[in-house]
Image 1 (tube, one colour):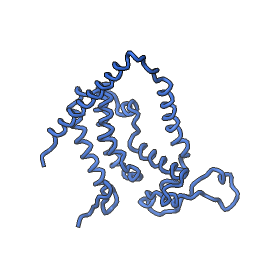
Image 2 (spheres, rainbow, N blue to C red):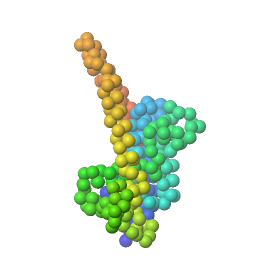
Image 3 (cartoon, one colour):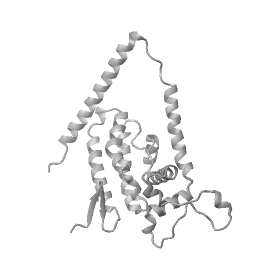
Image 4 (cartoon, helix red, strand yellow):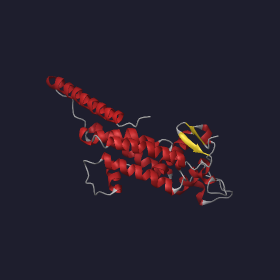
Length: 247
């Protein structure tokens, strides 16, 4: 009998410590980071960031809300992975002596612990506003005081009482505690507003349509960019296959 089981890409051990799951993430992430270090001169900075986000950041972000309340040791392990990835993705733009926190800020990447909290805040905010999914909405209830208090209009969530730290990792406990301590609107809405503002800025700064005489040149430029991107992707895939450990 095995002491762990893998469900939807998450390795659950008998103690629900997620140590094996984080070890699997680190092993896979470091492998891709080593492969990415072989082709820094073949890709641009934007391509390096895109490849890093698609291959490694997606693994760090997948089901990371389950890591809420995990040990600081596990958080540090994932943070080291993110720091290594950030240095590879920004190897051309920043000096090697730059601090990891400054690199993350330049890439607009949240640290691991803050990203976990943001995922939990976003999930809670969306559930309260859409009432979906119903099985999670049923776990969240607004606090109703037994007598008239000033906090009655603050939309606080009811926090069930638990006796152990392990039980406090449940969504029905963690989401209300986090939502009451940090107002969800102040956590989620600024980033949504920033995204909308960036889209509006992009739309307003978009150049006008080119004259008919330069349309062919513009289409040729787009075609040439796509060909260059495909060549870089093929180069990375070949490097990945050549450096893959033999079974």
